Image (cartoon, rainbow over all chains, first blue to last red; front, side, top):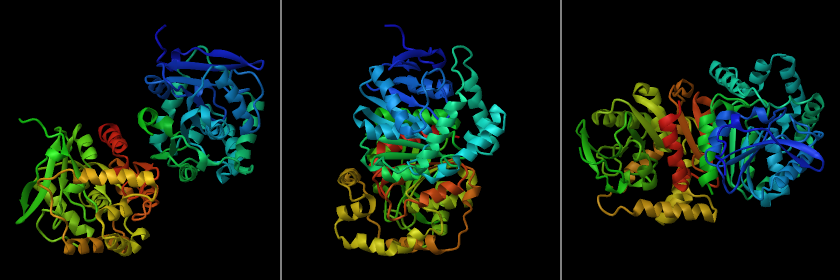
Length: 282
Length: 282
């Protein structure tokens, strides 16, 4: 067996076909009982995972990142609701031969992770939720306006900072470094997310805040690690307390002076906490 | 130089005289730039520090536990307010030749730690606050009744569990094990805290909730690690969010299904987080 890939920049984009649709994914890291499957945020692709975080996790486990339907280099049509997104990603996980896994769900990916915990709990070992919120959260009622404002800035760096950083110089400087890391990979990058996919995701995010609550967080049996920034305007930082109150076995960690990009701002701290949680916490 | 003491059970009680009063303390661990000084909870003595936590911290740093005035084997009279307690412990820290230190403040000890951060910030490097609350917290308005109820149980184990555990079997079982660890040391133990000292401490705790707020948490420059349980009836778990909102550079960690004894219930997790925070977090 060849040496494992331990740097995300060296992980080639691979493809797997499910029901006639070709899905893009990347795989790296040490062999481990449960790979960690990473589910991405609104508009994000395989290229939006911080290399420091992917490399840090991959030193101790097998890491898989997936573009869901219609995202990045994946074919298919992005659904306008989290339930359908969940069914799609479960098909990919199954096609990859994964019998049991951990999940890292970031933002919208955290919605999918919560839905998997309800729909298919038997494949789940542990769950990490970053910058996300429970179904029915009022924070998302103003999401379309927030997304519109981010797009209107018409400057990739400022749009990124608007969502992921606070207004402090320290936070902006750290998130500027994050975006530079995300751009380091020059070859074999993902396509940007298409406008129809963005529109479908906006609808899915908005519906997460308005559709009837079907997920019973109090029934989640797996250990859960919740990470959030002190000033997340997109999800509302307080949403993570709601998750914590309802999930029986959850650790809740807030990072200082940080917005939606909490773990982008403190990637080494996150790696430390995530690896300890995944290796040790029961 | 002799080998450092790396187990709290092997740390002898030592004494230092300040202004004619003999103070009891214990010292263990690896030499380190900043020792961590541990400030204890209501009624607690040197014997109420969990050996797993002390041993875990001492593997990477110098650890000092202190009985403040009138507590355990320390002489003197326990003051009925946090400000006087703070002046006393600062004298002991100074007499021990400590120029700069980290603080671990648990509950009432966390009030003293906050006061030191205001009165003498130049000696502080980093601060860990466990199960504590800001000045003016309403949670303490009912503290005398809570303490009364704990004493009336008239059973050391049940009184301990009443304050430090939740009602769940898991939490009670873990805190039962904690109390057993606290009782493992047979020789060279502290005297129990005297009734006048207990009464003075109750007054100090109650006043913390009612006296005018003098501490400006927003001026604390040091990194702060805040640890709290999900169900702390004594301090109110939400008090830690107030600390987090006001202290500029704080990490906030909540532990699941846990009460006032959060770090007693998850001592290995706490050691991991504390050592990482003290070694690395800026």
